[in-house]
Length: 198
Ligand code: NI
Image (cartoon, rainbow, N blue to C red; front, side):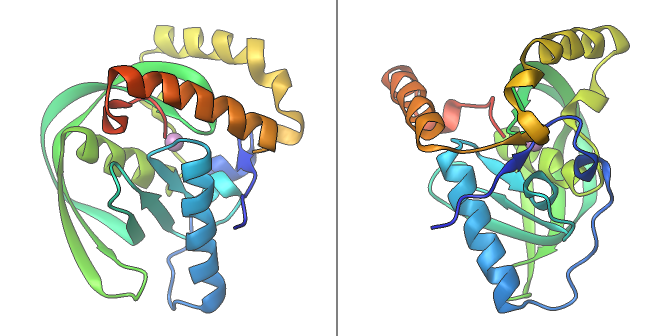
């Protein structure tokens, strides 16, 4: 199992446009596997390639034991508006309500490059939009009002020194702490109710 370092807010890779995947390779399959391992270790429900320093248009999502790989995903339909609290594995411990489309249809390829379509609403819909944003250099903070964004940046300024080189390293100590926090949460709510980490 390979855990990848997660780039945090301020890392240029998070702001770059990704490149579509033209062909699946064994190296990219390994990347997908490593992204799932990293996401699970970080207790996230979604992770996009730029967050692990890569420029391929790949994201992974797992809300509750149903892993989804999105290769070259595109939102083909949006409807309604809804608000939900979001967080991001690249912006740890910062959470704000974000307004997005209430429902989306997403067309993508799976890890075998077969076409797949998802209807996403609720948490899944939010997660799809959040991860696809990452693949175009956008972060959930971009959807906030100027005031809220300033507040988020103040909160971030207080903790950014915890991430030398703008990397979040999943050391055994970090993983143990995340696991302990997760166990605590599980007493109150099933894992899929954790809407706050991506
Ligand atoms: Ni994120």
